[in-house]
Image (cartoon, rainbow over all chains, first blue to last red; front, side):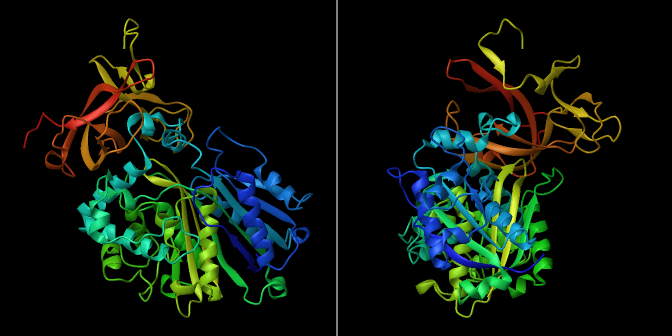
Length: 387
Length: 142
């Protein structure tokens, strides 16, 4: 594999854009990324788009082609990917792979999703699926339910508290208030988070990420071209994809996918958790962030609750996590989420993160889990970026 | 379920089988490698053997974790309680929990649970959709 760098990033603020088309949202992010890279669309040789579904009516087709045709990007291979909540990261990974293998020098990865156009019932129905009745929505299963179950077991085994979980929401909402691209920008106190409506015990509403509409795009280039396009290229030190094993014989307090993906990513980068200056991790629910601290080696197993409580995951702490505000503030805009995480890390490594800048950041980790089957995430992607 | 019960149907007919003592939760066992799984599958996911035997699962297990859900699918009244049950056959089973109010006093991690066959929800036409739930075990009171 050869060196690959990120030459351009383009996000739009996540929110409710029911009056605009999915296509237009995608165009805006791609235009921003291509401009940021100082390129023209014709420089791009391959494109991958992440889009889970067109929620109001079903599975769409050709969304990548529709978007890119509008901005004058045609002829090249254009491929849509889907991998649950890690759909955007999968698009990035494929673009990286195409450049890293030498199949092309410049590739675009973008994600786009428009979720506020569908009802909550429709979203729940698509999420829980119809492929495994024994764990489907018809049996009472849901994403908040699975993470409520994870939380209870973590509390039981390690003494993790409701307050520690709520602290994740407080932290991420604070950083979300500093991110112009976040959907929710109001800060909340610990008391406010705990008093909010219960969704699945112990997770109150602000501890569950909202959905939303939006898009995010990045341009990847072969390392040898990096400085031609950007004065501060960010290199991709690791790009890892794993799938779940869905074990029965384990305590439901961690994600096997996380642990295996982290080991592979650290090995690929020649780095360890002690080298990570900041991270964006998949905080779909507050408890998930605590579990990811442990799975990614930021702290020891069972100490995730204390890691947040002692401020280690805040700016100024050991490893600031989700300085973008995370999914809890931005919303989970599925196809765009993974790429949006990468955009935050690139901004941080470039020193362009404004009020939420992590001083001296040189190495950053992105983590995105996709979907849930039985006891494990179906897919997990980890990227390590380096200045 | 008898065919006369037109208004009641199982979520999945393969989940239950009468091995001679009434309906049991039914899994598959691979005669080649001994792996037991739920529900039955076309091949053994451990060794790809196509032959499998239907086996009754015990229907009793330990409560691995639980939560109270205030949101959920149409047809199941909220709030409801869910959990993972560890069956002695080595299977973790997601399940609705029943007969456990007040849930936060009655339930505890590790407690013995037993299966009941009950209506899970009503569908849009008013049919009762039947599956398994677990309740605190009544056999061995502590």
